Picture 1 (cartoon, helix red, strand yellow):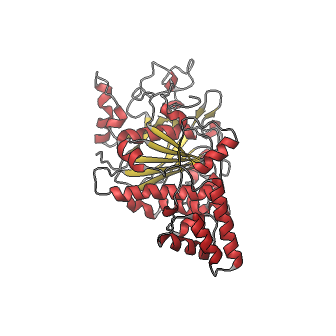
Picture 2: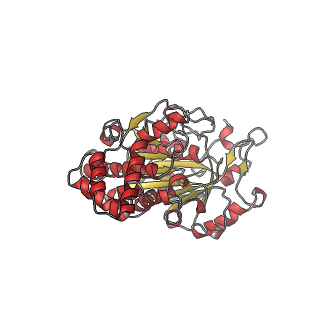
Picture 3: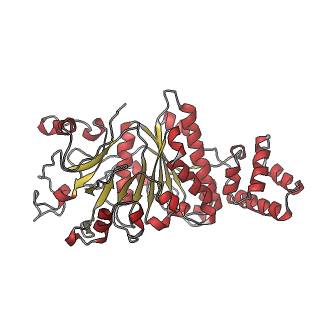
Length: 431
C-alpha cells in the first residue's frame, strides 16, 4: 500500500520528493509505469512551461505535441494518491473544457493504484462506454501512455425502457433492478416522493417482512392514513412500478464487480431524471456502501470513491432531487468514516445545491461564467484569473488546438497550481 502525505508542487519540491521524481530522468531504463509506481495522479504540464519557449513553438502549439521536448521533474502538476486521506473534490467548469477527458485520466491513475473501488454516476450520455477502449492521443507526457479501463457499464431497468423508447444506443450495457427488501429505510420511500408519514408506514411494512408491492398497496388502502396522503403514496408507488424501478433483473452485485473482477462500476442514466432516478441513485450508492462496510477488516476491503458526474441533473434544488442531494452531502461529510471518497462534477456554482457546492475540500476548476458566486469557494486570485483574458494572465483557452487550462487547489490551501491537461489516454470520442 502506498502511503504518502498529500503534496502538490509546480516549481519547488522537498528534496526527497525531487529526488524521487528525478530518478527516471537520469536512468537509461524506462520503468513500466512511472506515475503509478510513485503513487502519483498526474494532472498536466505547468502553465508557465506551456507559455514559455522551451519547445519548438514555431511548429507545435503544445509541449505535448513536440516529440523532441524533454520534460523535467518540475514540469508538471500532480497530487499524491493517498488512501489514508479523505478525497472530497469538486470539478467545476462550463461545457466543452474537457471535464470528461480529465476525469477519465484521473480515474485511470486511481484504478492503477489498486487502492480504490470506483463507482461512477453518469447522468447524461454513456461517455464512459468507450473507456474500455485504449486511447489514441499523441498528447502524452513521456512517462504516460494510452490505456483502457476495466469497466462494467450498467443501466437500471427503468432507464432501459426509457432509453429504448428514445432510441439511445444500449450496446455494452448490463441491467439491474431494485428489490423491495432493500426499502427498509424511510429515506428510500421519501426519495419516491412519499410524505414522511406514508414513508415511515411503508418502511415499517418492509422491516416486518413484507416482500410484495401488491401487499404494500393493499395495506395502504386499508390503513387509517389521511385519504390524500394515502392516495398520493399509492400514486407514487404505482409510478415507480410502471417505470420499472422494481424490475425483472438482478440487483447490483458489488462483490462480483469489485471483489472478484476489480471493475469500475458505471451507472448510466441516459438523461432520465425525476423521483425514480433520484431514488435509484440513492439505493445504488447505499448498496455500494453496504459492500464497503461488510468488507472492512477483510482482504477485500479498499477505499471507495464515487464520481458524481454531471451532478446538476440530480443534485439541483428541484424537489425530486432532494434524496440524491442529501446522499451527496452525506458522502461529503459523515460517510468519510466508512472509507468513501467523492468527486462531484458540475458546470457552475449555482447549478447544484448550495451545500454541495460549498461542501468540497479541494478543487479542480477551469472557466465558468458565474465568477461572482465562486468567490465563496476559491480565493480572489483564482477568481481574477478566471475573469481575465489570457493576454492579461487569464486561463489559456484555445479552441483551435483544444488547449484548455485548469487550476488545482489542494485541500485547506490558499495556494493553487495552473496546468494544461494532457490528451485523454483512455478511449474517448475525441482526443
